[in-house]
Image (tube, rainbow over all chains, first blue to last red; front, side, top):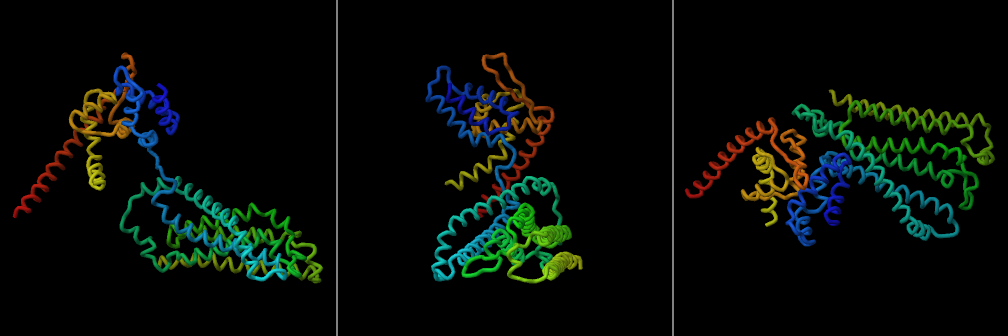
Length: 319
Length: 114
């Protein structure tokens, strides 16, 4: 009977392979048990609707979660999306606007440039939204599958309250700080990928001399993307944990160290500056190198302070 | 009505395991189990029962064996030793709970009378 085999197929294809055969055999014998001696197609249909949808039956056999992101992480997932999505959209809009502004300035009024950008923006918005959703979801799905078991085994005691964000309110992670972390990440990333259109010497709305050699700059993209992913994961972790802890401060410092290293690698690449830019800044090479070094030192100093702040906030928790 | 339905389902869900275990003191296959449960007035969705049986087997409360002597192979389930022990304990627990609940609900009625 084709309907019966189709039903069994629909159930078992949703099950782990090693269980399929046994369950199929059992289902088949049960179905035929239920059917009268000389059965019609109507009898088969009755029996199968008695069994219910193959999807539900298959789910009954499974003992792993049906959800991608469980209740444990769902709140953090939603808050992180709510933070990242507007930032990503805003930054992508601003970069588009700047590019269009440079392209059309002089020829068109500011308002019409704005409308052109808005018209072009929708495709980009769609793409950005998809990217954000995909990466954030992927991160949380991995987290769910690796962290879930640990959480359920742990026993809760009232002492755990002393580690909670509600108890340690003075070093709780605020949404504002996560927002700014992500905002700067997005802004710098947008600048990085649009550097040839945004950074350089412009004349009459045209980029006559980009500051950076774009090929060299963009050759670092895997490192930059890794730094961005790290930053987003860290933001998710901060939202989830809700309070500054030693491991968090350590991760924070590692993330800062990593992105700073990427930054330094790029800045100290000998070919990073565009050859044309030299003609606009007729300065001795030594001078340019020195200003790069100073910039790098300032960045490193800021980063060290930021990393230290993280540890300091943990210190307050102990006191 | 749907609220009542879901409350009733919830109330019954916990008792299903006990009902199924009680019938497995002697070997049963899927369909015979459905019938013997139905005879006692217990309706259980087949889509709940078959997965439940496999779960009980994984938990080592029941053992299963295929009988291929008849015209159709049938999978028989029966309580294991551990299953019998657990069943007796669960039964005692149920009797205690239902006695408690009984007096609780009776008390409710008499206070209404007052």
